[in-house]
Length: 70
Image (cartoon, rainbow, N blue to C red; front, side, top):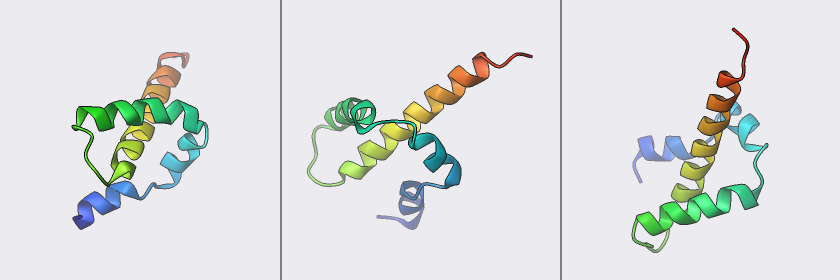
């Protein structure tokens, strides 16, 4: 794995703060769908898990931003 790819797998504080708000039950179905989209490869399940976390974080941020009064 490249150092750039590895760096993406290490969450920063902001990612960790938002991730703590998601249960494994929220992340698992999305991670599973990403794994299936990639053809169900062996190994590297953390890629799909991390991608699912990032997607949920982005959705939450978008939702929070759209509900913030101007």
